[in-house]
Length: 475
Ligand code: FAD
Ligand code: NAI
Image 1 (tube, rainbow, N blue to C red):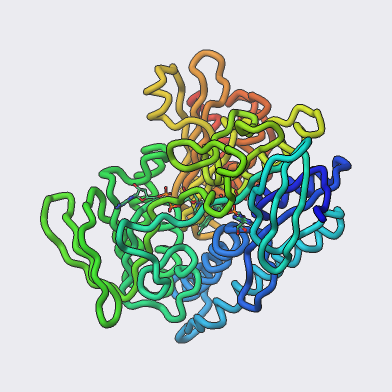
Image 2 (cartoon, rainbow, N blue to C red; image 1 turned 30 degrees about the vertical axis):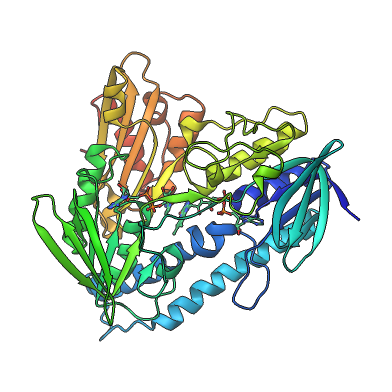
């Protein structure tokens, strides 16, 4: 006997669980299906983000940053510690606990919002009168039916051809987050977001880290000036980043791996490492959904084909998050989830793709919203730029962290903010002001005229806005 719902959500990552909660708030009977299982065999909703992504990576970034501070920066404050030791097992256990708190939090939210949760794999069976039949296989064995289905099955790490992840020597993000001891030598392929964040974690803890990047430019999607500043900081920290390499054969050694590559000068190089992290992008999860049963269309990348409103080719079937086009970010998935639930309710859900912030949680942090200087040039937009260095910010000096800057890009005629780019302390938090400003289509002058608390890092934002009009006060 099939259980009837108004809305079935497949996947309980940030796209799916948020969509389920919003749909329930709007008065629908909602089921959410997720197959993620923790080490104890229990349900672990929250998807990649909670289990092997955003949350655990930030937990390890925090632990390793404390270690780095204690080792290299406490002395400046007059604090002497003696030898600082890292208990990796304890750090990983703390991270696992942070993950568990988030898993449990989502289960609590499902209860609170009366979302029926099913632990298992969801797949399409067939279209039925007025909706779709979905099978749940796993811990919960059920057949569910609903008029509306939201697919939010996320993504998985892309492996190099013929180098599968064994999570012992060749690690995806999953293995990279549970290495049992600090590797002496760590190689990373892909100098994107994961490569830099995970490379930073293990470098801070003492690993000799080499990142091999295929492209000749460092962080090509980031504003060039900001990327240059970040690269300078990473070089100084001893994070070795080789650009423009061509990775060749990867062999397993008795202990670790050997990576053959051609460097940018065309020289053949061999790099032996205890562990290798492969972070070369992610692929959408559509395996096991049985899309053929209902004729759900995929695009050429294997993502579910959707329009700007997350509608698929099938009436009543929607898809959100990493499994569709667009940036693979948790907050983008969440916004799409909310918008879809509201569209199902006949409201006008909306996601502004122009104001989705990006953050790379390295030290210094890198954050941006809107267009980069190189994009504005390519688009032929006349713009004004203004920047302000943290070196001239009192709070940054007091913190002892004066790396980087805030940079504003504004329309040359209207002064509307077109992009804000930050590299430096707490960039992840500072970017929120820029997002709000851009959502309200503020001008650089608007930010320049707003009172910012003193002393605060946010004064660098105000000063960068003033710099657009060449009238900084403290630089
Ligand atoms: P997911 O989070 O992948 O969730 C999909 C869920 O669906 C999973 O639980 C999966 O098990 C389940 N599922 C799949 N198929 C089925 C099925 N057939 N039946 C039942 N369940 C199924 N983004 C940020 O914004 N900020 C960050 O700091 C950040 N850090 C990251 C760090 C790392 C190491 C990684 C790998 C990613 C990071 N991301 C970050 C990206 C972020 O994790 C993803 O963009 C986000 O999780 C996408 O959400 P989603 O709901 O679309 O999919
Ligand atoms: P990515 O797309 O950020 O970076 C992949 C890098 O690998 C690119 O620089 C690419 O040029 C390079 N590359 C690809 N193939 C290669 C090859 N064969 N040899 C050498 N280099 C190669 O992907 P990543 O780091 O795997 O992360 C996946 C996604 O997860 C990100 O795009 C992001 O959306 C999300 N994420 C977000 C985070 C955040 O918001 N802070 C943190 C971590 C991940």
